Length: 167
Image (cartoon, rainbow, N blue to C red):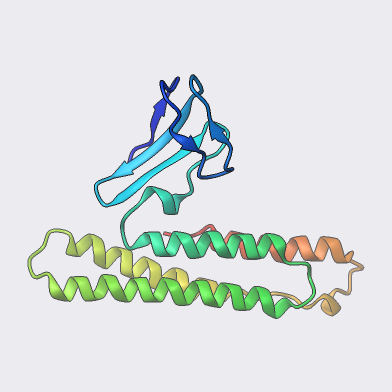
């Protein structure tokens, strides 16, 4: 989907779907529309998330990715298992979508898209393996005197790096 930039609206399109601020007459805004979904409108201060820019099966992965990124940002360092669980949940979503691509391939003989779908499915499976393979350190394992805040940031960065590798 393409983002359409409107320099100045003649009538108010309503509220920004990102921040909720009303878009007034004469203000610029952005919109995305497709045949299969409702228009999405954002003020110029807000950006579209990848999940808002697709109608493909990958939208499910992008939604889960965004939710996991938020979970990682909000992690306070209390239980390292929460980070592992978040990545495992994301890996599960990636595997489910990979399976959907596989089902589509088996249902569509001689379709030119099957190679692309197979590549997507393989990439998602590989990414899921990587997500499940991330090894976090317990805070008590720090023998070099690392401060807890630094350790928390290191674990967040480790999770974020893995999440960002989304195919």
